[in-house]
Structures are given as C-alpha cells and as structure tokens.
Length: 245
Image (cartoon, rainbow, N blue to C red; front, top):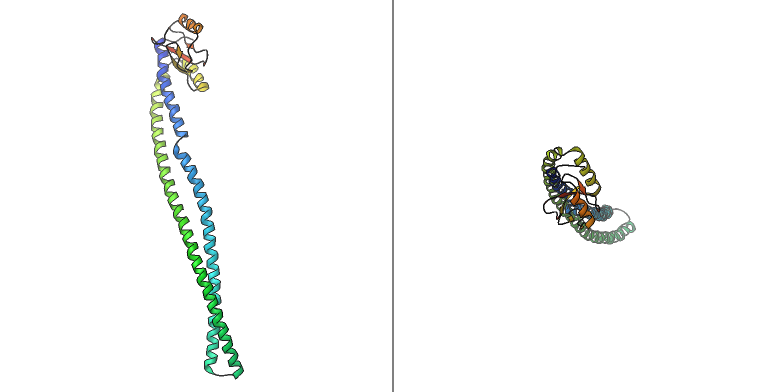
C-alpha cells in the first residue's frame, strides 16, 4: 500500500485522538465512584437487614407491653368491682371476707404486672435507641450515596463532553484520509488498540521494540510513500527525520 508521507504523518494525529478516546473510555469504566457505590450498596443492604431486625424487636416489645396493659386494665376493673361491693357492705360476711382476700391477690397481681411493664418499657427504650441509631446510619449512608452519585454524574458528563469534542475533531481528519489507508489503520487499531505509531531512532513506537538490522534495511529500501509495518506488532510505522534510517 502506498500513501503520501504527509498523509501518513496525519495518521499520528488520528492516533492521538483515538488514544485520547480510549483513555476516556477507560476512565469511564474505572471511575472510583463506581466502586464506592458498590460498597455503599452492600453497606445499605446490611443496614436495611439490621433495621428490619431492630424494628421487629421494637414491634415485639410493643405487643408485649400492650398485652400487659390489657391485663392491668382487667385487674383494675376487677378491683373496682370488688371495692364497690365491699363499700356497699351488702352480702354475707364470708363473701365479703373472700372479696378482701381477692383484693389482696389483685393488688399483688397488679404490682407484678406493672413491674413487668416497666421492665418491658425500659427494654423498648433501649430497642428504640438501637433502631434510631440504625436509621441514622442509613440516612447518613444515603447522603453519601447521593453525593457519590452526583460526583459520578458530573465526571461522566465531563467525559462525554471531551469525547464529543474528540469525535468532532476526528471525523474530518479521518474523512480526508484515503479509504484503503484508514481501513487498514482501523482494522489494526481494533485488533491491537493502536493503528499507527512513530518510528523513532530505529524503535517502533507501538511495541517499543528496537527493529532488527534486517528490518531497518528493508524500511530504508522502501519508497517514502510505501506504508511500512512493524514485523512484531504489525502496526503502521510512520517515518520522519527522527526515525534513524
């Protein structure tokens, strides 16, 4: 394949743009915010599980407290009824005496229930504190996630603007190159990531290897408009006065 040396040198400008585009694509894939968001997702998932357990503990204690309060209300109602009968003084003496014994038992029962309720309420206060702490950590993690997402989106927007600028510059440059030359360049670039490289001091700028004496002799014999390729990496080597030929 042949191409004017000036045209061949323009491949280096094209390669510079393509290298920049590849770097931008790598930057997009390797944004630190991506790893941060994955870690935050795991953290929030674990916190949500913790919140569910804490909420269940609070709900269980609420049910136990409600049950005891119902029992206390029943004891109080029974006491009120017995006290009213005693106050009326009506009924046989043996029955009134039985009511007095029952009131003693009811007072003891009420005291036991109220002690149990107080203990449960203390447990609930502790459980609520645990739940509040977990919810606070969830809120803080969500704030960090929102801030990280904002940084990610801002960086992605910046990358997109740079890519658009590079693609806009690439289009006329690639369009002015001969079809066979740009076709070869694109094929090599798709295979290796780099389509053309500068030959400097007898070294290929693509694979960074020094050319053998035979390769240098071959290239010296080539016409200036011959498109030469590295025998090692197969990239197009662009020759200049610095090529060491």
